[in-house]
Image (spheres, rainbow, N blue to C red):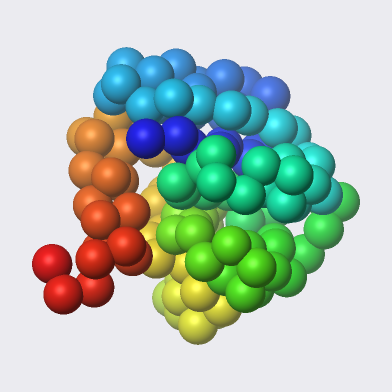
Length: 124
């Protein structure tokens, strides 16, 4: 399974990448939402899942969520340091399949493959 990880914080991005690799996922990373969108558009069948930080300075992450949902129909997991209900609900209503709090733990990442199975096999 190939995951695209997006976070403007270089430390968070490196930690996320290392944890995903420990879980045996193939990982690509970028620190910009606009670059992530370009990567997804240019390699439509390469990625299975996107994990993105809520706070991306170069693009409204909820717009990214909508575009990924409309153009690629990939599951997107949101990451944030804030767990307030309003932000979580906004993410879910814009198409996020899950919402994880930073710092993310390896236990949470071990099961993200299930979102890909659910998305591709709704009757599973």
